[in-house]
Image (tube, rainbow, N blue to C red):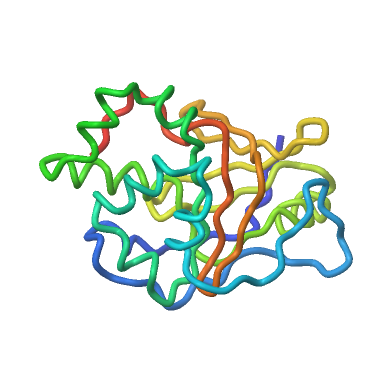
Length: 198
C-alpha cells in the first residue's frame, strides 16, 4: 500500500532541548473538509498551558516539565504534541519507568521519548482527515522531531496513528490549539515501551 507523505519535516532541534524551529509549517489544511472529530479554533496561550489545562494528559505535561522542554514548547514553534493520556503513558511505561524518566539522570531519554510524539507545525484533526481524503483514503505520513515517521489512517470513525516499529494509538478526547501549536491526546505510546530511549 502506497503511503502519501503530506509533510516531511527535517528539524532535529529538540535533541538538545534548548533550541526552537522557526520553519516547517505543517499539513495540508484543506478548507471545507469536515473532520469526524471536529477541529479546534485557533487558540491562545502556549502548548504548555494547553497541556497543563487538560487533566487527561497531566503525566505527559509533568514529563515535559522534568525533561526541560517547557521553554521550547512555550516558544515560537509551531509544534503539535501527540500527548499520551495518563492511562496510556503510565500503562505503556509502567509507574517505575515513568518515575525514572522524570529524574535528572534520565533527562536525555525523556527528551527522546517526547520528540517521538512531536511534529513541527500546527496539525488539527481536520488537517489529518483532509490529508487522508486527498490521498484517496490511503494512509499519510509525517516526520517527527525524532526523525521517525508517523502514519495516519482512518479506522472506522477513528483516526489511527502508527509507527514503523508497530506502535499504534488513536486520537482521543478533545484536541486543543494554542498560539504556538496544538495538543492531540492519544490513547497509546508512539514508541514501544521496550524500545531504548536514546
